Amino acid sequence: MTFDYNSTRNKLILAEYGRNVQNMVAYICTLPTKEERNRHAQVVIDLMGFLNPHLRDVADFKHKLWDHLHIISDFKIDVDCPYPIPTSDVLNVKPDALPYPQQRIRYKHYGKTVEVLIKQARALEDPQRKQLMVQSIANFMKMAYVTWNKDSVTDETIISDLKELSNGELVLEDNVNLNKVEVARLAPTNMRPKNIQKGGVQNNKNRQNSNNRNSSNRPKNAGKRY
Image (cartoon, rainbow, N blue to C red):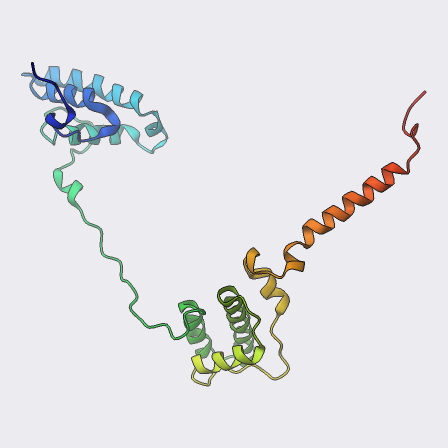
């Protein structure tokens, strides 16, 4: 007596359709006439669409079903397909390799984005626009510093790092202070000061306590109609 285990069966090509559909497709390939193969193939296509109703939301889902039919048959089925017949090459197409940056980041807690922004700011010719961008970069640097170091940072440290990263070309004006409010707003919740992080909850509790006190002082018969 022999047992039929999955390990002894043929490889399941598209598991979402199941082994029965794959056996049906294999049977269609053995039919002698093309008329019979076309008739059986249409029945299998309808069954495949019934087993995977989510494909109906895909644009031109019938085309996808016919492509899957050819893939399940290992591109051996000979039927009249209403769409261009795919080949085995479509399954072996490799995507183009993405370029991975191998450049060294001078200050990792600021990230590569700061260096890109500094490079763009150095190329600006309008002095007023350049100074506004420098201030925005400094605010972003302060936010990134607080995010990763969890400590307070002075404006002098940010100005010094900005000057070093830009090779001395980008300098903040003397009367400019970095926006601490914006830093607190942009920083992650767990990095914000406690008074900012829990302020909304505390205010809600205060309003609720105030409403409870007002309701307790209200006469018992208030609001009743006689």
